[in-house]
Length: 188
Image (cartoon, rainbow, N blue to C red; front, side, top):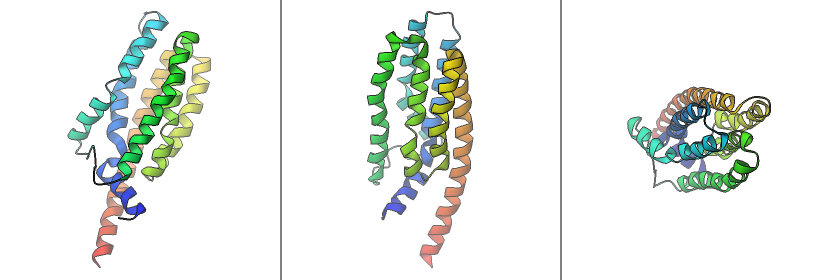
């Protein structure tokens, strides 16, 4: 397989990572619930961190429901996708610094990092949605986070993730059609 075939394989077998985006809807919804409570901000921040922990198991369960090849071990680009995700863990150190230093802005910084980490997936999955959302999310969240309460940031993130999921569904449908056309052309 050449590079373009491997990227197409990732797009099709992993359905452009939609299982992670669907899982993040659940996580951001839980974060929203936490932000709507009357708990102290440091408690909200700690619980927000806790909410991010089940991302992988949630994505795995969703992948089984929507028939996504979660590991796609035969494609070497899968390891690149994992590296893109692991990279985000390093940036969580910034969020950990913000946690006690500027606690009211921790959720904003977390959301900005989440949005920005989507950029390389735009290349991997040949996705305009990933590329656009990786720019739009941090910019919009920065504006909202500087001007409104954290619960508004959480609401906006839930909305972004829902919109993003629909955009990915459209892209997945197009990729399936492209793969079918590509397979037909190879048979000829």
